[in-house]
Length: 388
Image (cartoon, rainbow, N blue to C red; front, side, top):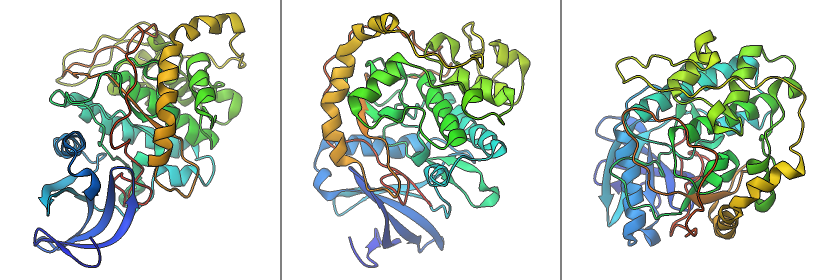
């Protein structure tokens, strides 16, 4: 589609905001309501694939169920000349990735960003939706007050979406938990782990796991923990440092079990920082596993003999690497180096009550099968994702 073509006699289509492996995002205008919009169009060559169409439709349905100031709003969904499309709110700001590319963020801005993202994810999780691809490129900056909005639910998992193949890996490896890299099912805890990695990256100006080689990256995620925040940035207050260190702990039992729990700890709630259960409003009480914030001790790499146990799940890593080459071709262009996406997961059925994160000891995963269309890209200006 080019020029100023009309979509279903309502939306005027203008320039391209971003392209990715599955879709492109175009700038548009809603002629009925007289407002700017972003229009996400599935690539015509992929429209005939039932699996890809189902994934695209799931994105629309998943995001449309969510109404919150920290989640990008879905306005409409339909089909034009055989190609499905999603109409989204048009945001004028940048992505979090764009901001981090300019250097480490002020501590107060990082705290505000984390609070916004956790607020949006709390609503999504309560609705039974796991994002599964939380990363800086999927966090958009809205103009009013520079608040953050979670975008791109293109690989979100809902109770009604069961077409994802067993063993398939979906998401961006640099922000995956050790359990996900090993092939374990997605969970609320995986979204929160990725939030912690974003906070770390925003504070230090680089990814917690900066390895570019897929093999080295997978082993680093499964075998090591990033240096404590206090060791890499001394001006960070103890509460924020403890929250981020705990969120990205290699031991899943030490992490947060819900967005509400992590958000309360971020606000300085001592009970949440100790690992006590936190009220989630009208939702059923969430069981929080015992754990303590990771101490700000000098960073000590894991000794080789402790890493041997991790290599027992090397089949999961090999499966990830098998998909990496395929994913490299599907990653959209970016103004800054972006982590290489791969595919993951077994079906997950989120429930209204958030379950504790999975044990770090996982079973042998099923063989990895790359998705037909590849993972979603980045924000409006960086790929598939919604971006203003």
